[in-house]
Length: 366
Image 1 (tube, rainbow, N blue to C red):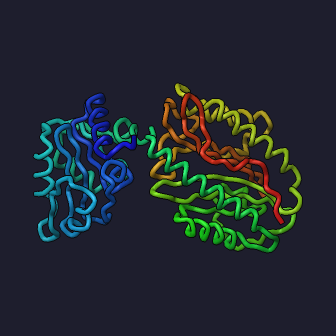
Image 2 (tube, helix red, strand yellow):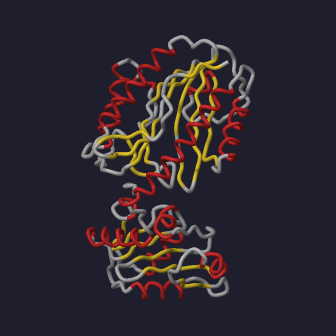
């Protein structure tokens, strides 16, 4: 059964009861899309969704009222530019039914600071925290509809990356390859979230910006790309080389692939995110390349490409069924090449299930 927005609201209220939360305040963000399927125009005009145990409604600029109404039946407390938001905000807070003296409130950590201060000024006695144990908790555990959407995005991404490697020829630039991937997404009903194409030494920069570097024989290739399909993204990194592999490429590929496998094995319900990071990092450190693994092992993925849980060496997040995150260890050798292999996985039936179906073996191009 596909969960409805009403079900998500019920689940949120259950979490609010468990965590002693009186009010959740959400700005125009991915949290709002998750709860209400609404993404109103975001500017300096305050717009918020407030949820209590007995009420849910929006503070809404009158300018956006008509365009937003088509997406939700929740009540609007509209305010005009000529009047300002204070009176409408006061009416909304009264409608929530909370005790305004000292409520326990959750604020959207992605909301503008001036929006949050409006709420805090109106509730000076509030005990406040962010969304990690309410909306964030729910979003980190994907439902069946989200699983299917993320799976479909990754299967399309597989085809795009396979097509890119098949088209690669010496002399092509990184930008040209990225354009091929963009076109593939568009032709199949998706949009590009990001696309990093790295030739040769450029791969040693984990966040290389795709540029005009041409592909040369003997150069390594790294493609890290993702599309958005039906509201959910994909993310994957694969590697290859042109003609013949650079010196040491096969050795580094084997080490990084082993690190991926170790992290996959560690990704079980009850494990900590730091256990997964350690499993991958230990493999690379033992091989003598610990100093060349420059970043965390992974990040969560859902409505956003980067969201909780974060797979770091310091994270105490306990993995649970339905959590989706990347496993992407890498080794970066300056002035030579970088090699990262990335899978997005879901904890499902007690283990890590990979969304992509594209093998991690190196592609030989040209």
